[in-house]
Image (tube, rainbow, N blue to C red; front, side, top):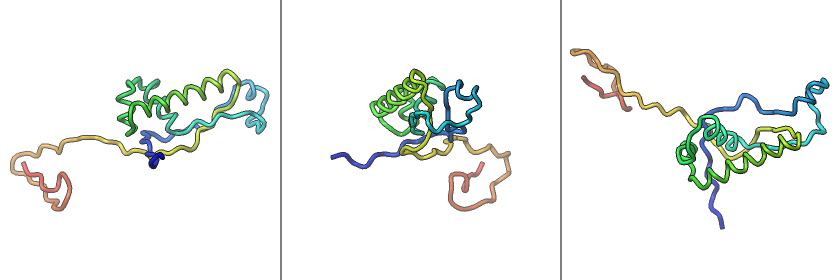
Length: 133
C-alpha cells in the first residue's frame, strides 16, 4: 500500500493556463468547447520549466521540487507525452490541478556589515536580531 503522496514544490505561478491550436483562432473561435484537451498538471509544467527551459539536470530539478530523481523522471516523461499528443493530434492544453505548493524564494543573504561603533537596536528572535559588529 502506498503512503501519502508528497506535495511537489513549484517555483512559479503560471500566467497562461490554456493553449489551443492556432488554426481555430484564425477562424474567429476564441474557445471551442468541442475541442479535445489534455490536462497538464502544474507540477508537470514545473518539470518542463526546470529541465527544458532552465536546462537544469534531473537531479538539480528534482531537488528544487523536493522529490526524488526517479519521481521527477516519471513526472517529466508524462508531461512530454501529454504535450506531444496535444501537438500531434491538434488538442488544446489546459494547465490545472496537481499536488503542489508554491515554494517561497530561498535567498541566502548574509547580514550587512555594520560600520565600527554601530549596533543594531532591534532585539528579539531571528537570524539578524542579535547581530553585532
